[in-house]
Image (cartoon, rainbow, N blue to C red):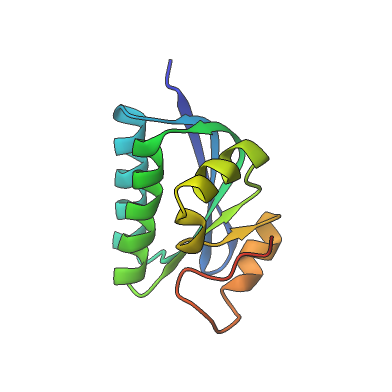
Length: 127
């Protein structure tokens, strides 16, 4: 059984939502997440929102995976936003100072709306 479940859907014509449930940790699930983002970008789906409301834990490999996905999206002239991040996961990003690199939003709609606003490529956190 995988530690991380993913579900992909379009929330707007040009925004793709990736709902994540479980843990983002070292292993094949992290590699599958990177491959998923690579595939989305290849299909010109460049605005991506990760819904992390169902993620209970992210280890250092998982954080690296998320940053790698952000970097890939930005290189493709797109972006990645994180929505619904739990306090526990947000704290891990804060400890590593990665909260300065990637934007957090309280909800998927707020994250999606952020793509329309000018600003940093990684977005501006709303917390």
